[in-house]
Amino acid sequence: MPEKETNNGAAAAPAAEREPQVTDLMAELAATKDRLLRLLAEQENIRAQGRRERDDAVRYAASGFAGDLLSSIDNLERAIASVPQDQRSEPVVAGLLTGVEATRRGLLDAFAKHGLERLDPIGEPFDPHRHEASFEAV
Image 1 (cartoon, rainbow, N blue to C red):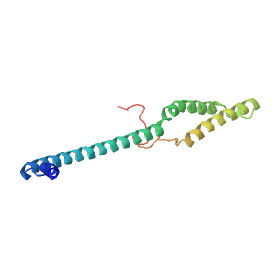
Image 2 (image 1 turned 45 degrees about the vertical axis):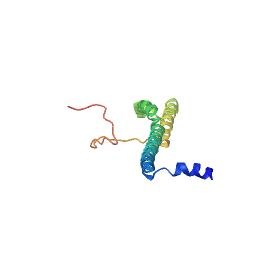
Image 3 (image 1 turned 60 degrees about the vertical axis):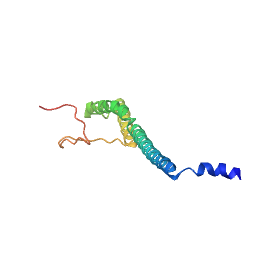
């Protein structure tokens, strides 16, 4: 029987003493749960932000490179337009012109393949979602 008394001795502590401990433990548990939920929400927000940044990086990775190539397409078009009509039938000029036009088409096809399309904004009102301003009129 002495064993029962020893085991029950701790359990037989006055209820008034145990009540504050239980209340403190419940409050600590609630605070820990709250912190855990906040940390989980923050972690999910970080994951979502990382996904958005990764998607944007993939989406716009080639935009700088493509922008650099736009001047090349403009130069190819100027070269094509500079050939006089009366010389276009000459074999040497016709062969050169065919190659320049094929290069221009190849670049445009590569742009189209990656979702870049040519806009002709002349005469349209400025749309900041579609157009880029290169200078400002005063």
